[in-house]
Length: 157
Image 1 (spheres, rainbow, N blue to C red):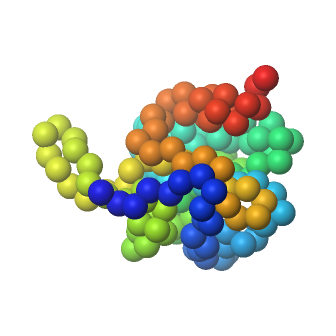
Image 2 (image 1 turned 180 degrees about the vertical axis):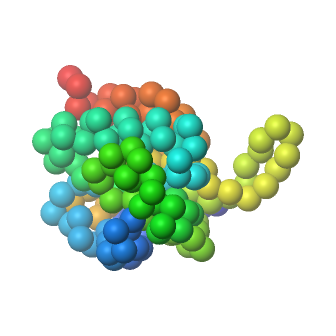
């Protein structure tokens, strides 16, 4: 089982390439809160639903002081196609060697249809302006996750 992150711990820093070929670092979000979410594969039904939920909620999340970044093991060109197809308005980062997912506890053993394998665990980590973890959620559902996250962050009160 991968080491899961806990609130209060320092979020592991990273620099990854986004769908436009630009480097994006966690340090670049200092001074504002960020939602770092890990998803298994671009352009699949569940991941598309989740990404579109973040897209549709981005303005209100940003108003509340949160930036959003999605991370998957997909190559940059696949992320570019996904972002274009879905009109995504936040960075999608390529973690092909899944080193960042591992550092965040989002890579590990999965079971699907009775088969056990290593893969990306759909996860969301909220990082405060100083780089500390506020919330770490693992094995989240693609559908309804953004609404639940908003409730957990008390954004809809």
